[in-house]
Length: 492
Image (cartoon, rainbow, N blue to C red; front, side, top):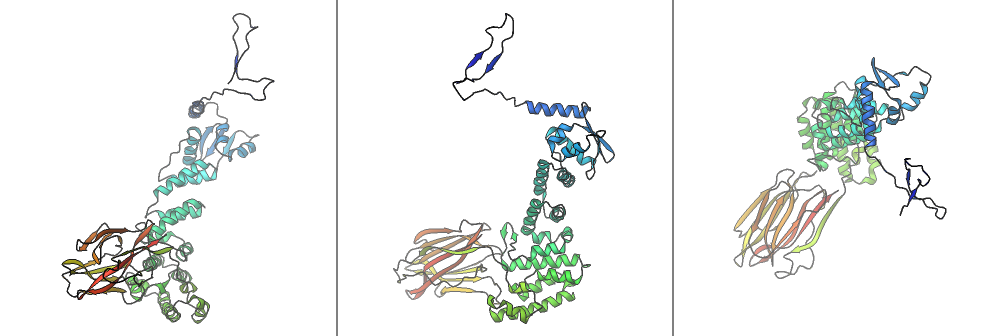
């Protein structure tokens, strides 16, 4: 506890007493003090400095910017950034007048106001020039605020402007943010007039990346859609930049992994760009694609033969033999099997797994309902998948439609994915129902028997029902579904 030491015992009457708060004795090496802090002092100092700046009182330096004169206080500016200390030292023997280059008078006025008030006044119209000025004068807080503000303003129409700006002035953090936005909205951005402002070599560096991941509605786009978006974006860019030479055309077309696209997809893309389909460079790349596809089909994508393949097709871009990487994915079952108790037929093992292609998506489901002991159960299950690169659509079919009393057909829209499955099961699978990422509910279809179960998509950034595997058995003369297992796919 602090002690009060009194220093007034020998003071004459009427003298003012001095009180020191603290302790400092020879018996102790420690000293205790009460320190008062006036939290308003710094604000009052700024307010006073601002008033004197506005009135022109006590100023000791004069800046000439764009023929405008600004009177200021050296101490305030030295506290603003390290830029001013050497500047003032250089001018120590001068007349206190400094001509400031590379900064506009409007931007300097904004920065001076910040120096005296701590407030930064930026708008969409002046934020770029203020950022450049703050960077030039090493005013870090204003730089951060401007960059944060610019990030918040990024949209489809201006992201290319932001990219050009951030690259030219080496604002790496802003550039990274704009690039992420570009990847999230590439299809939409490529339709804007500003898309053609991007440097072709820079655009190539983005689109040629083996790890390129594109997004749509904040969900990443898988292989086939991704390459289609890249192809259309390149065609849009080249259509707007016809003045570019053949070398640049070839460079950008190389960034498209054409072998990943089916002939139908390529034709659909070119149908939107008839002028490009007549371009000689585009025609030559389409022929190179035919060669590449033949090589890849022959080797069945055996990557150990990449060098040999490239030697056989010297003009084919090497990257075409190297498919882009997909984001990390897992196909997972929760080890739950339904109608797998063995009451109707022994089923000690899970059903056989049919597919493992991560690009598969369920397009439609057929369910046939039959009667079993007067109860409605699932008699047949058919799943049709969307095409990948093959010309045929993968199909899974178990059970039959014979003696069915109801047939339910569910066709999912493009990009509609199952995120929840409702199952009723006992000795057999009694019913199935589905909910999707678009908020739609289908079913449940079947009877009310059996216990009620639900499975939902995994808690990953992107997950949905990958497939349904099951077995069928004849009971009471007709097929029925049992030993059913769901598998979910997740992407990171």
